[in-house]
Image (cartoon, rainbow, N blue to C red; front, top):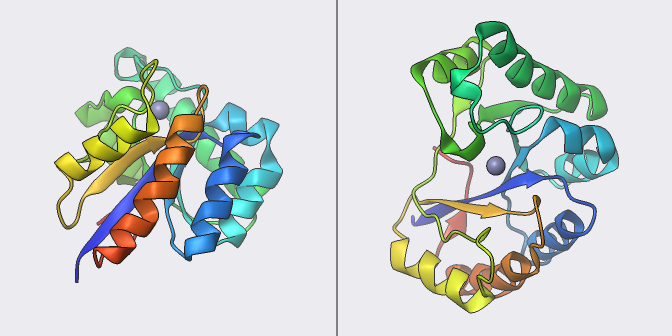
Length: 188
Ligand SMILES: [Zn+2]
């Protein structure tokens, strides 16, 4: 059947993550949360809620350094490894299946480091740029539909700034996609 993967980056955020979780729960759909280590440390109860609700986990590094691919090996190992360990520590039994490079700034070294720590590199195919200043919910919804195809990995953000437009867009998008016959799965 037709499926998409929703991915939510840069949380957990005390304001927006609970709103996103409530929506996903309402429609009984699952998403992948790409968590930043410093946010995990500040809001461990949100990580436990994400896990309890059955969502998938992605390591989005400790500090979200957009230039990680230029850093020395020990820094790369720390940024990736410490975030994964912290997630596993605050949510015992949770499995971190994916790794996403900050800003999508990949290098073969980052891919290798993630694989060595048993995580699958996670990209995206639909980017409505919900993080841009002044972006409206309507424009996020429009951009997703414009770029969408079966098997799409949709990039959205539940952290890193004011995400009211993202939450409002999800409130429209999730029922639309369900009506169109999509199911929500983990990224392939
Ligand atoms: Zn990010």
